[in-house]
Image (cartoon, rainbow, N blue to C red; front, side, top):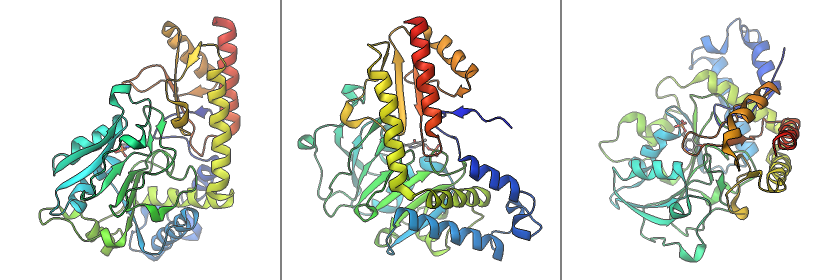
Length: 361
Ligand SMILES: *Cc1c(COP(=O)(O)O)cnc(C)c1O
């Protein structure tokens, strides 16, 4: 078997130990004679898988009792609509931070349902920084405040969550969930597509403070109503069973590997090493993001001579370092270094980058 180092932004690399367990259990899960893929979502086997996954996620993130965890479909992009459909209520206005491509998409979708106030925007700085707190214009009567803690494309990350007082804080945590400990009680809703730092594509996790559930407007489709999913324990219809199972194995892997405080230390080391390599290259490589807000998970970089990009990417692939091409909207390169990317993978990338510079610099 040969594994490469996969720096994809998502779907992304998964822990090898998890993939091996999936392989081992694939045709006969725990003596049931069935694959998890073949099980009824209402049977006792799958219910036990589902309950353990939720319990482990609650433990690893220290999710308080008064939060509901939903296992949904539709990706983070569906949450862009579900959040306003469920929270706008009669207020019909919400606050949004505009810090990158994903914020902008969330804003565009939410604007279909009410008035969007932009709290702060770094669009004019090409989304390379977080606007100073002194410039934020929070509306204390907003239905909620939405932000994107980590912008996956721009590689821009908030250092801490905004303080929004009594207004519920909603976070699109698709690319930063589980990367470090957070205080869940500071949030009204946390949502994330699974395919970056949780598990396979097809699963979307929403962690919702209970008092925010059951407030969807009358024309909300049932599949978009948190109240309906919460009441049915995420089994209103067939959930993404296999993705739920694999996510559960990832939560278990996190618990066995020191939990989120340990992940944070490793992630910090990986990101620091990679940014150091970029910053010490004398301009051969560069990252445009304000140092205070550089992402731990997604590291975009460009070369001073972009005509070398194709050669860089081909050489990297040959060295077993793949999916490093930057997002089509920004070009250059991007290394996504989620929890499942081992330190050896980042070190191999750094060696390759230094070698490439020595040969071409
Ligand atoms: C990937 C990503 C999305 C889109 O997720 P889907 O699950 O494909 O809808 C949204 N927001 C952020 C921050 C992302 O990284």
